[in-house]
Amino acid sequence: MSNPSDLSSTASAPASSGTFDALATPRSRGRLLKVLGMWFGISAAVGNTIAAGIVRAPGDIAQWLPNVYLFFGVWVIGGLYALFGASSMAELGAAIPRSGGQYNFSRRALGEYAGFIVGWSDWLSTCGTAAAVAIVIGEYSGELIGPLAGHVKLIAVAVIIGFFILQWGGIKWGSGTQLVTAAMKTLAFVIVVGACFLWGGHARGAAAVSGAATASLPSGWPLALALLFGLQAVFYTIDGWDGIIYFGEEVRNPGQDIPRAIFGSVGTIMGIYLLINAAVLYVLPMSQIAGNTFVLGTAAERIFGHYGDTIIRAIMVVSLLSCLNANQLFCSRTLYAMSCDRLFFRSFTRVNPGGTPTLSLLLSTVVGVLFVLGSFEIVIAMLSFFFVANYTLTYASLFVLRKREPKMERPYRAWGYPWTTGIALFASVLFLVASVVPDLKDAITKGKFWPPSPAMLALLILLLSYPVFRLLKWGSNGQT
Image (cartoon, rainbow, N blue to C red):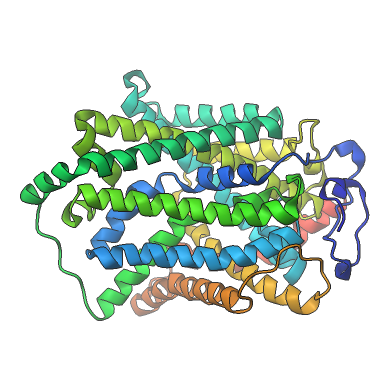
């Protein structure tokens, strides 16, 4: 297999040789640095994944499924889905160690147009996520520090630009920040979980006396829908465990470190999430969790008194800073990879001596700031359709590559293949259909097709994407 750090100057190798597509980028443009390891991969995944979702998701799931076994059951199923997917993602990431995320797998297996759809939807949704995270940082900062209140967008823009400046200095700055913030947030959550189990017994007794009765569990079709909604919430909350695949060219030993980082990320993330939910249930009855949009804050108040809310918000700021740093790193790598493959302008392949794709980072930052100043909610809602679609294409890519390129060098082979990959693919298709059918059915029965729902808008954009793909490819091929 070719050395990933030499991709920017070598020619393409035959597909069957086990190498991945080389990037015909002139040496003068610089190259990504091969300096990352397993622990960075885990920190990128933990930093990206454990963020605002864990604050809201338990309350939503408890409202739909007010039963402790079903409540934990959907988290366990979500963890198994991630585990089965991790096996497939680890094989692809080790065999095609290019920076840029899932885009590389779909392009290699299914062609440039499929790669274009995955790459652009991933890039835009990640820019939108960065904006959303920055706004929440602004909101929490205003609640923690009085003079900052009312300046949410200003704080959000300042934080995005701050990470832009930090990452411009090079991947060592970005990776160092990721390692430190991910370790801080993990330690903080472990301390909160420990405090809940040590001192939460008396708080639960008091809450149970004064709390409302637990809602009854639905049955039949409503129960099936509740399970579906609960699983969707879990899937969206745990998404991000594959963070290492955005840095394949920058990993020192991708054949070993990418699989280890992926499995380590799944284990760490699911362990933290299950412990957090168990701690919350130990402190609060289900009736006080259901519908609570800041359940960790409520649990912390029972333990730490009026300081509890402040403690959790401070932890969330650190968590969100780690998440924002990871997202901006992801954005720049995805746009860089597409530019190397002439799906965007060639000038965006430039990398500075510190290993930062500078123009890709700059444009990603500008788009994130525009989302903050404008509106990103519809973009995030629309691209959540592509979130599942991208996983669907990735797992399908493994089947295609196993059949079409059996001699590809695979440092790691997915355990349980084809069953684990098939289960992950089936679950992805199921949730992809579930995200479209209700909106489509509602539009047909009510005869209301405008304004379109987020899922329908995503389908419409998918139909219109091919001319954009051809135009960008034509424009980038015109560059030298």
